[in-house]
Image (cartoon, rainbow, N blue to C red):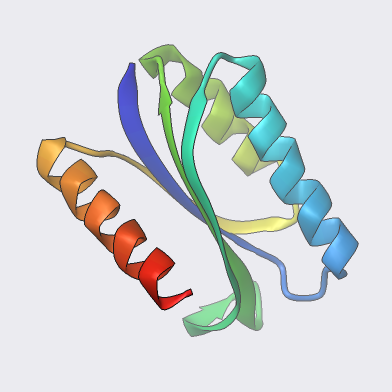
Length: 112
């Protein structure tokens, strides 16, 4: 199982329940394919660096998970099919990135 991180941006015109629904859809998709979540973060509504689809902000979410490599292709197809998703990026984490992500999570937990 490889270690991955996905950040995706949802349309800012969605209601809170629609945002939760979209996030739940992608969570369930991964879990049904045998993925194991390491962490999930809701970064909230943030201003974009440049307009996307004539929108200047979006709801950011981060998933960190372990999954087999064959899960990624259908996972990213789901992002492309969902009109609520403005952008997404999935990266495979190497051992240094995994260590950095753990350190970052610990720091966030101390602040909270």
